[in-house]
Image (tube, rainbow, N blue to C red; front, side):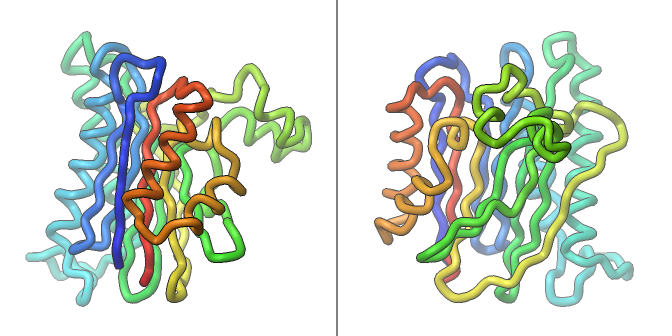
Length: 247
């Protein structure tokens, strides 16, 4: 397993509120897109990622137990625990300071273990599976336009220019009780997973993402190419990309 990640503030924003982490040793990969005034969004996204690192650093993957505990917990259970704890920490921090009030963050997470990927998501950051011939979005956007598309009220083309296209319906820090999406998939040799914020997907199409990922074996080069393309098209948001190659 090899991976690479890259983040950029973009060409409009003054602060980068995105965060990411790649920990090949744990098979842990996360992208988070923070929101909130001043440095609040950055604080929220860093808190979410730090929480996951805390929790999975104490997890025994082979025996499916937290170190020092007898309770059996699956990787999906652990993902849910991580998101819930991150949500609690963000809310606690947001009420502790007037400067952090209203902060929140999206988060997509992939845990890779024994040729399987275990996924968790909240918000509109995304995870894709990419092969030599296909790209598949594995996560569902928690957004107003996605809900409208699901109801058949707008098309995917209309969603791209809808006035509410950046309005999300779920995130960490929004409310005390959260529901996240989880998924487990098998990984074949040479499958790639790509995690990203909407700073990429708002400006680069799925097909373009697939072509760039498959055009170069150097993952460091791939993530920079994707970010650069989004910047060339305006870079109106922070842009973050993580890619994992099941080699």
